[in-house]
Image (cartoon, rainbow, N blue to C red):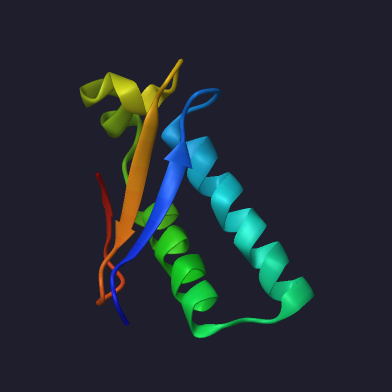
Length: 86
């Protein structure tokens, strides 16, 4: 699997809410249209991020992850499934 990039829109909410939103959207899509390998990898990467990230610490150390006007981030999911925020 190649590295996957998921753009996170933080203009109206924090990173935790956006990752949950992205996760729920992809699960819904998978149920409606069926799972592809890429969609399954995205779902697993988002789930891992939700389970492993310390969102409170992330928001306190990186103010832009708390959301606000013009804020965007990228969730990179490596070939091994490890999620990293860019």
